[in-house]
Image (cartoon, rainbow, N blue to C red; front, side, top):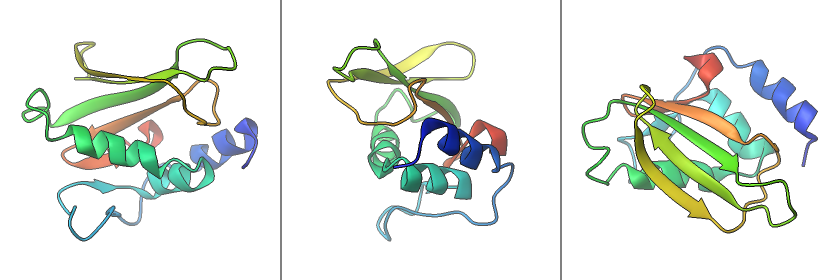
Length: 125
């Protein structure tokens, strides 16, 4: 896996997307951008895309066309416990999922936007 600095550098290159990707032929309602694909590949984090898309069935998100998703570590111990949470873009919490362990390589975690069914990096917005 790449160093955090190399990952940040690779993600910073994404300011738009040329293609939208899907997780599977059965999941065409939600797509993700080239930048999110890069993040998933170099961070080995397709699980993060799957987690975000799986939450879309929750009633709290059904009418939220714009969502801010964040993965944040709870502390800097070796436990690597984190929280995945979603806000509506106006600092209103919608979803919170505690994670006992994650090997996500960026110590600061990551923020992603879901805009009308498309998951993207903030730099691609």
